[in-house]
Image 1: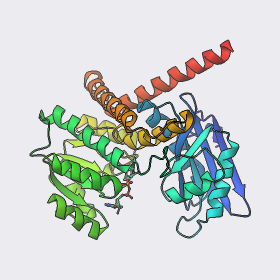
Image 2 (image 1 turned 30 degrees about the vertical axis):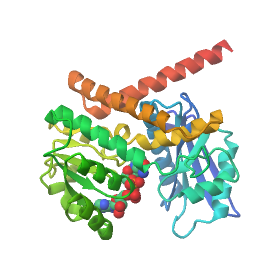
Image 3 (image 1 turned 90 degrees about the horizontal axis):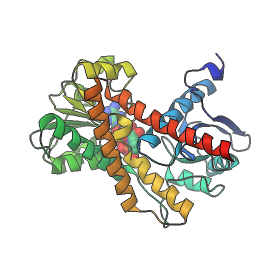
Length: 363
Ligand code: NAD
């Protein structure tokens, strides 16, 4: 199969491969769409088995960013990049400077940020070579750690779901199973606890678990046991694809609301959840707070302004309205929530592409 026939290619505007012999850089940047603005998405450093595997991953992830950015109503398109290599043993400042020079060649069509295996320090190295990176700390533009904003979005989404399913404005009497209490899950656990939820938590990091349990009164279970607990809501905040054929029959919950990316192993799982009456709040709607936070930094950069928490709050509120629209339409059209979210994102991208084409034709 050629690149153009791959389902993941999905009309990408550009796919760019970069190599730098001196630093060992091997990177692929995929620009899915710039219809709504420059493509923005993280850089993943991963020890891929082959370049083909890396290509497949970057294409899938970059298309996902177009959808996430559109659903969050950001003036940004979707893109992603991958650096092939082991982030624990092969990272050097020179490698990230070479990556910065590669990104710079795209002239602002794509902005890179942190993702799995890539830290704020790595992005700061890239920044020495290009202005086209975001997710930096410090300075008036810097947006810093996005996790608290992501957690706030997941928390508000949980309240939305509680209002719909249990007709209540807080989480009193509800049991929530939180999988992964890292950056987002930790903040989320505190918010859920403060709103009255009873928590069941798991993580592979035992000291972290004990810390969170001590301050929230959460019950701790082993990582694999989280799927079997009696709970009302499952909050995946660790890994992707945890909604899969193996876990589906074990879950007793009435709703899934969590921060993890790509929670559905396949789209069919979303349909099965819908048919079973389990309300799945689509991952990329629920967890869009983080990219909204990053977008504020880009906006500050473009306008010469500063990181603006009020703008972030406005976008987050609008995202929660979009979630309401997704849930309303899912109920009225009798279609799974992930399909409705995709339809909203696709319509927004299409409208922007058409407006851009009209402008170009008029020029
Ligand atoms: P993190 O690495 O800080 O936290 C993940 C936690 O999951 C860690 O504490 C880890 O020990 C735990 N974990 C790993 N394997 C596990 C397992 N098998 N069972 C239970 N726990 C396990 O990551 P994060 O920044 O909190 O992000 C969590 C998820 O949310 C990720 O999927 C990430 O892609 C997604 N996300 C994060 C943000 C953000 O702002 N950080 C934004 C959007 C989406």
